[in-house]
Image (tube, rainbow, N blue to C red; front, side):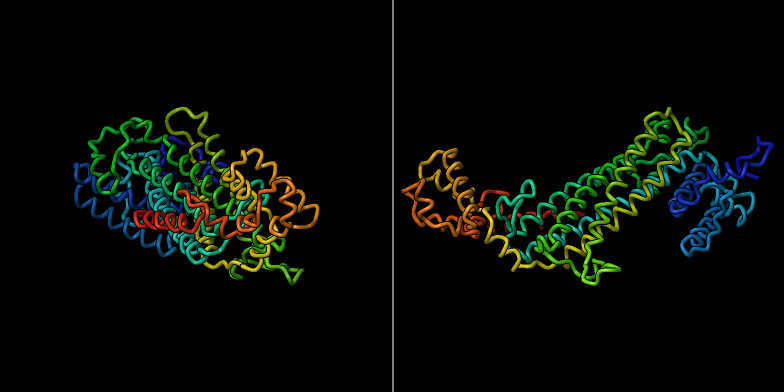
Length: 459
């Protein structure tokens, strides 16, 4: 007999039972569900709906159930549909009919809403902790390779040289923004829905503020219909998770490029790579590739929940059961990705020889030559055209700007002397960019100080 089956005359069809059951995935809410029930029972006793003796018996049974859950000894049953009914059924087996009083003044509608709020509060804090570790790894590795100059790209074409530390710190600030977004969502997750009942509140003298205090919620939903139907905080989470995965995917793409033989700028530790079943020489960046690929599934979960919610009338509808699997899968995708990239960043090594070779044969100092011509009094557009002509001339001769003879420059600019070769020094090019946020060592050191201060105040 179903716990809700009093008005039914037929047993539930087995396909309906299988199709509508959520216990296969919502059992991860088990501890949160018991936590909410313990607070609910305490409140019911304080307002006189339960006697103290009844409350103690129910709470004792719930504590036994928590132990079963934590030790993987809880007997989940699909015929009990969801985590709420499974726990109530188990409580009945332990303490008898008194378990039926647990559900007084609440519905599965506000109960599941509470479970998700409790669960997501912990998840968001875990994500913030993992972001902190990843950001710390970026700072540490940036400091380790502070002297390394790296080709900077736009349009995936060589543009201007930058410090490798500067490039890594760009991701630090991306992840800082992710952290701000997740922390902001935590504020709206920190709201108690229990006490809303099915949609209209309850006739019992419940004290919602007391339950909020017991469970550590900072506020209570002021509208019972909104309380049971709100999934905005989950949409926010999926949106922010999508942005965070996008940042990880961009970093993954660069790791994949940089470790290829065509670039060869860095090498990943063996523990974060895999090999080929056929080609013994291969060392594949499978982790970054998978993160890049899994980003799409997180996007899909966001679109999926938006689609579920777009046509729902108030208040609770069974469609809302579809919020959980996408959320859980996103959590199981994002958190390991953050953890793996923390390890990847912490253990990568830079191939200085390959970087030196790459930087010695490109034209990434061209902008600086144009800037120096401007300082000589030549209008920028004319200087731009002159340098472009010299680049073309060097290409035709199989040279670089640094190896192009001085007389080739003087054909177009007779007043130019061998200072041009000083302007082409890559270290000079980098160190000249001292503006705030620039790539000069002095500017990057300042950026590192700001990043460390951010980490200090992070958690």
